[in-house]
Image (cartoon, rainbow, N blue to C red; front, side):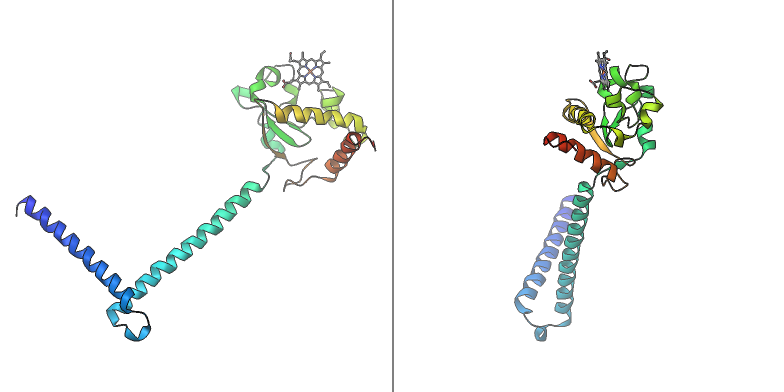
Length: 207
Ligand code: HEM
């Protein structure tokens, strides 16, 4: 058989299969309006159709649940550990992150300030909130009790947070699990206290 004839034959066969499938399909939808008129062949076709339709519905539901889960996971705050933060100090040209009141920012583009051996490298890889207004850039400065500061002192942190949040090339990364946020990203009592003190200054009713 030459290849042209074989191709023609295959095309004819394919057409025949398609026509038969269409005939069975349309015949079934036209004739099988109730169970009483089904012959065994038609019953198979109807069963197959139902299977396809139910599988489609099931896949649709699975898709809906998966997309709801995806949306939900996107609304959950990302929370990182102090260990992860501590690994972002800019060593070996790596990223530089810092945290302020538990909000972590990527400040890699400020390598000239925060990079290894630069003047503000102290802030890299940690939450050094108290030192942002005390200027005590050492371990003692880190240990300072945030509850001991006045509302006005604390308010200066708000200025820094705005600075990082609105900076052109620094980006918010996540919340830090620790003094200011719990593992689920909920504010701790300490952060609530600080937020209230700052708000009291903003509202002219200093606590
Ligand atoms: C509580 C005290 C201070 C804090 C928390 C602080 C913090 C910072 C931070 C975070 C930056 C980098 C800003 C950025 O990312 O663009 C910066 C830059 C700078 N700071 Fe301070 N600073 C303090 C005090 C001072 C003082 C007392 C001086 C001057 C004597 C000073 C001079 C500078 C200068 C010149 C820059 C520009 C960048 C540089 O040349 O290193 N800062 N400061």
